[in-house]
Each structure stands twice: as C-alpha cells, then as structure tokens.
Image (cartoon, rainbow, N blue to C red):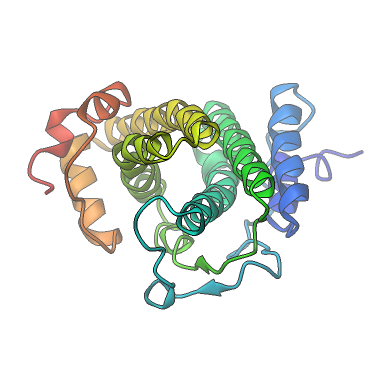
Length: 266
C-alpha cells in the first residue's frame, strides 16, 4: 500500500463518510488504533467532507422543530433523553475526526493523536448509550434528533483557534456543567446503569476539554494573543448562543478553563 492510500487523512475521511452507526464506531476506533500504532502516514493529502455521512434514521430536524421531551422521571422521558445524548455523542465522533483531519497538518502529530483519541472515546460513549437504549427496548434512530450540532464545525472550518474555542471549550464544556445534574436525575429514579454510563462520559469529557484548552493556549502563544481575550472574541463571533451559569467550576478548572476565561461571559 502506498503512502497516499495509507494516509491518516484518507482514513479519517473514510470514517466520516461511514453512515452506519456501528460501522462508524468501528471505523473511528480503528483510525485511532492505527495512528497510535504507526500504521498511518502523517499525510494530509485529501480534504475533509463538508458534511459527514448520516444514517437514514434518526430523522434530523431543525432545533426549533424538535418535540419536547417532557419533565419528570417517566420511562418515555428517560428514553428521549438517552436518545438525545446518544445523538450528541454520535455527532461528536465526526467533530473530533474532522478536527484531526482538517487541522492536523498545520498543528502536528500531537494534535492528531489527541483528537483521534477523543473520536475513539466518543465512539465508545455512543456505543454505551446505544446499548442502553436497546436494553430499554428502543434503539438509536427511534426518535428524531437535533440537526444543529454540525453547525459549529461549518462555522469554524476556516480556523483551528475558532474550532477549539467553540467545540471543546464551549460545547463540551457545557456538558461538564449539565451532566452531574443529569446523573442525579437518573439516580433519583433508580436508573443506576444509565447514571454509571454518564459518569464514565463525564470523566472523559474533562480530558477532552483539557485537550482543547491546551491546544488553544498553544495557538494563542504562537499568535501572540491572550488566551482568555481571544477565546471571548472567537466565541462572540462564532457561537450562536449564550454561555449561561451555573458552571461546574471544579470540572472546568480541571479542564484548564480558569476563572480568567469565564470572567464576564455570563
């Protein structure tokens, strides 16, 4: 096999263009393994797709067209929440793959390693949640899903600093804030299996946000920019929403999001 056929960018692109959820999980994990084992060339000879492949189901809807999940601990509400979380993790596989393939050439092997490891983690998270849905008599695709998650990738495709500022340092960081409360909700209704899955995800997401913060800080150092100041500027430009408290201050600090970053954003 020649180096072009064995390039990491081609392997990443192939994984992103895999529509079947289980096959995408396997493809993402295989790319991460092959890269870590030195079986892929650090060649960025093909472009990332503008939009990754998606299965026929779930039906993808605009955010304002999503049905309400409802409140309380009903089985229907819990299934809807698990399904929504599974979809977030499914899209997160492609977000991490895209970061590695789109920006790896300029940022180097360490950047690629970090984001391929994130892609492998997200694949495991999706698989755990999908298995939980099946154990509850449902499956991924049984309900519609939010089609706005890829917007962050499209909005920041031109600039690695913007991508890092918005995806790990805003979107994934929000997961640090809301997941503990979600875990408590499942524990309150006796669903300890789902709570354990979410606890595993929370631990991994702290590492993902830390990768984002560390790489963002490195980019800022190269550009002679203040990390908190540039982060706020890029979030204002590229994030369509508000960053609202309450914040999980301890998890954010563990991930490198200091009080200086968070000052004045809410």
